[in-house]
Length: 290
Image (cartoon, rainbow, N blue to C red; front, top):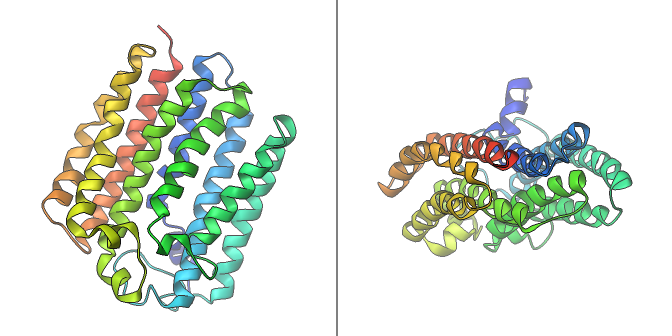
C-alpha cells in the first residue's frame, strides 16, 4: 500500500508552481498599489495550493477507475498503479477541496460574497476535468480551464481580495501566468499522447497531434516574455522577468528536438522552475513603481 513518499508523489509536487506563482504575482500587483495584505495573500495561497493538490488527487481517482493510467509513463498514480484504494484517493481530493472552500469562504466574508461563486466554479472545474460522465479534460478543454483558473482567476482574484478593485494590470499579468500554467499541462499531455490515445482520452495534445503540440508548448513558454515587454511602459521593472528567459532554452530545445516519454519528465520539472522564476521576477517588477 502507498506510503507517505508515494502520497507525496501522488500530489504531483512539480505542478505546485502553477498554484504558487499566480498568488505571488497578484500580491505583487497589490503591493505596487500600496494595498498588500499578508494574511489575505496567505489565505489565497492556501486556496490555490489546496485546489491544485485536490485536482491532482481527483484526476488520479477519476483516471484510475477508468483505467486511463494503467500504461502511463511518469510519476506514480496511486489508483492506476494499485498502491492506494480509490476511496482513499477520493477522500484526499475531497479533503483538499474542503480546505480550499474554508479558506475561500474566509476571504469572501471580508471581501465580497460573489467570490463564493468563483470558488464553486473552480472546485467544479477541478472535479469535472476528469470526473463525471463527460469530463471536459477528455475533450481537449483542459488548457482553457487552466488558463482561466490558474491564470486569470488566480492572479486577478488574489489582487482583488487585497485591493478590492481591479485595473487592467493584473489581467495582463494573469494572461502571462496562465500561458505558463498551460505549458505545464501541454508538456504533460504531450508525454501522454500514446497512452491517452489508446484509452480514448482526447486531450488537446491528442487532438492537435505531436508536432502541433510541440509548437503550442513553445508558444505558451515564450509569449509571456512578450507580455512583460508590453508592460514595461507602465511597470519598467517588469522587464526583470526577461532574466528567466535562459531557463526556457533547455525545455524548449528538448521539446522541439522531439523528446518523448520519460525524457519529457525532466522538461516538465524545468518548465515548473521557469514559471516559478518568471513569477518571482515579475512580482518584483510589478511591486516596485518607478
